[in-house]
Image (cartoon, rainbow, N blue to C red; front, side, top):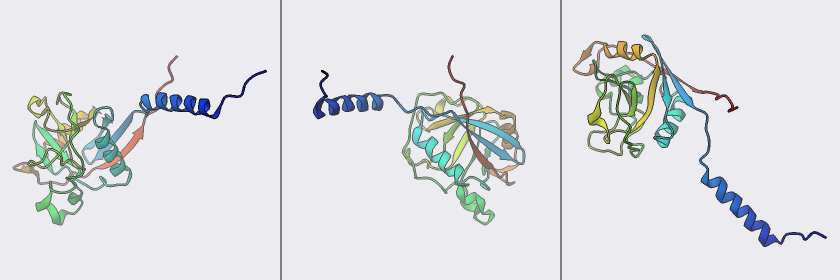
Length: 194
């Protein structure tokens, strides 16, 4: 004759299962962002394991169309390109480019190196915790940026397009031509393990 477990024993087992489930981080498929511009397209692999809040914000903004029509408003040949400012959708606000879409996220710093193709959150110069929609892409290694900006992605294809964007004519570091972007998010399927 088998005994029926007491409600207390059932609750204990359920509590143990809940603790075990909470200990395992949720698995999400790798996510990539395809950035289309008049100069070509490039792909960014997003890094939620490095900066989960920044990746979530980027994906939500992209899926809502928030990056579509924004420009790469800042170009430093051989250094970086920067874009994603929502104000850059409006050419009449060109004097304010670089000031919009900031102050939304706290920094998620890592010791990951800033190498060619690194994608990081732009921020206000006066505040470490002022990231948001704007981002920049490194064209060369920049070790001095470690601990200063949040890395949330890396260019995995089309780096030659990023190089072309960096050659956009500029007044100082402000692009004189509009290089608009359209961002599409792709969750890539991974093959099951054998």
